[in-house]
Length: 167
Image (cartoon, rainbow, N blue to C red):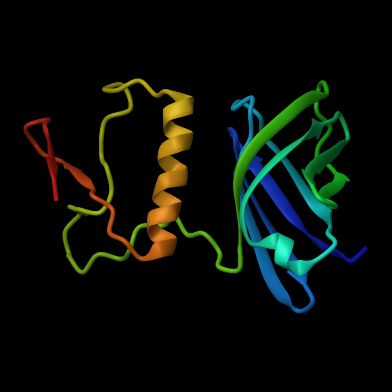
């Protein structure tokens, strides 16, 4: 069974990983439920049967232990490794996402404007809206899909009057 070394990092229920598979990078982006999970594994091992398994949509189950990570994608694909920091307790985790050969980039495109009014990001005071972690994770996944496919994202800019305007 082939294997590859890599890195995974989960912040508030969104996990991204990078693995060197036969000299080329493979990336994974998945959600992690429960959504409040955060951890890092800098020495992760990806095991797989066939490199073709590392493309497209995936579902998985696993555990973030006190000291280690175990993710099972089925059909012989798994990610395991020691966590960078000890966790207070173990928790069963699960989720869905995508394997890709292109790194996901959530950074906004550069603006050509000399002023501070970037029409490609949302500027809203933190106390103005409440956040729903489930909706936020779904929105993040959809934005990644749009960026990877080259489609535009409708963005909002905070206006001086306090209202939002679509650009």
